[in-house]
Image 1: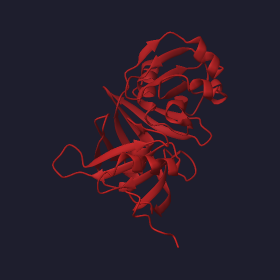
Image 2: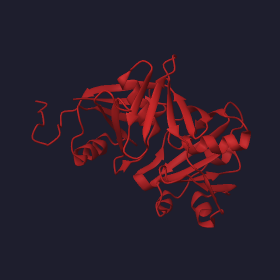
Image 3: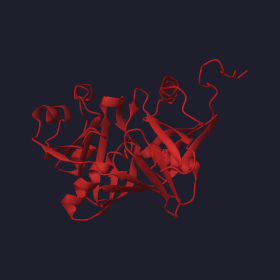
Image 4: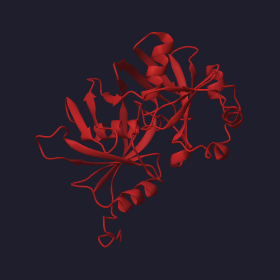
Length: 274
């Protein structure tokens, strides 16, 4: 059984967001997939298998962090499309986010078609501002699928220099905290993502967060197509477009590791390396 490590939302190795990708014949038990994701120890590992022809999707897709299964993941979906390397459009059936698609963009990139997150404005939270160590300009909830707080800060510098109290943020019963601000140059907006609720202290590039960032910044700028930069230490670029209630997220991906997964489902089929 092959396992790949793919850097997503980047066109060069050791940047963007790394994801594990395992292609299966069918899903084994959840505990095995969770154990693999914990062993890989990246923000997400994707598990994908083909579906019978004639349905709405060609593949089933699930994502696990080292700690839990998640409802939606952008960078691991991009990594999966890169591994499958199908021409045209690949459609994925997911458990909680409906049918998602990835379309080859012609330059080695893929465009993901994801639902746009519904944004609900909230009053600024002084406790959250204290934990972030920054003044909150606006605060939104991104809906039950992504289940994040989206926090607007006053400047790109404030986003880049943020050193939040991650232990304190873990007290919020949500997937994570997206922080964002208008970019000074080169990009339309910058962001960072702290996935404290799913065991990911800071995610390098979070495609699913851009399902909220896209409509948020579209409403601010009046533009439906933009370029975002996630200002983590690894960094990554996401080209975004808003089309009605859908977000199009475009990026490149690079395979860094292509190996063999020897711990087979069930445990008794472990293959000795000797």
